[in-house]
Image 1 (cartoon, helix red, strand yellow):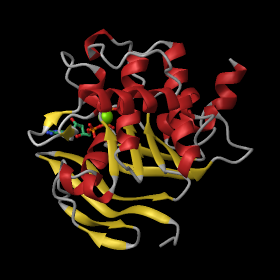
Image 2: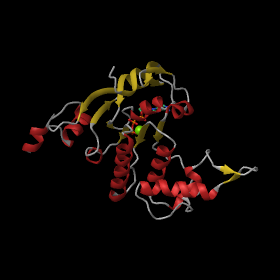
Image 3: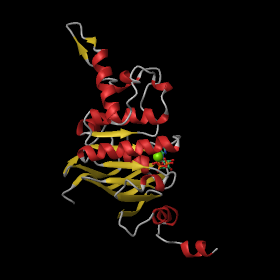
Image 4: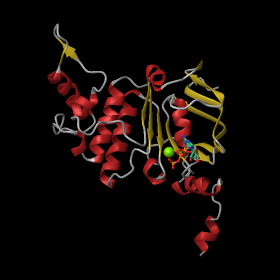
Length: 258
Ligand SMILES: Nc1ncnc2c1ncn2[C@@H]1O[C@H](COP(=O)(O)OP(=O)(O)OP(=O)(O)O)[C@@H](O)[C@H]1O
Ligand SMILES: [Mg+2]
């Protein structure tokens, strides 16, 4: 095991009925990593991330957090370790405002009657958003009126603020404009740069994640088919080929000759 591994999944398998979603997968996330976690629809990416975050239990296999074997039986367990996840479906309440969503279930109160300290929550929320590049004060705006990029930034800011030591983003850029997508990637990079928090970034769009990732892990029908560092020789097309054929440079010459 690498000394640098923050989290490791060893020989993890998971089936849903007849579907083998994960077949003996080994996956490590090291300090300083931004892992581009890629693969076709149904490859098992979300399933693996749900195992790392206590949503699903694996049928077999082990999880290690900073070298220690751990059982992660619920999302609360994952949160206690410091794992923050942004799911494909976003965990926000549209009718509540930004600050309320930011502090959801962790509201700040003051005084003998424990009244909600709205001012303080808005101030902290606004400051955190600003640190991630949203300087317009939108803390009292309902989340349903935010742009996709603002909403993603809110979730990133919240995840970061409550002390994540590992951030997992599952398809965070779905339905976002090109500009908003860039912003989310920039924010992700900023968070990573601030304290070197490792990040796992799931996407179907390789060109998007390519500039910020240092490693790529490719899943195909529940199996890991590649796990590679981004070297100078590696390009977007290589990673795409791995997803399509499990090999690099598959039919490239043929296609380019056409
Ligand atoms: N709760 C579940 N019940 C039954 N089958 C499931 C469940 N979750 C996932 N699966 C199946 O497991 C396989 C892996 O799904 P998973 O969601 O992990 O894929 P994915 O790589 O995240 O795909 P996508 O890129 O489309 O999000 C699929 O065949 C899916 O239908
Ligand atoms: Mg998925």
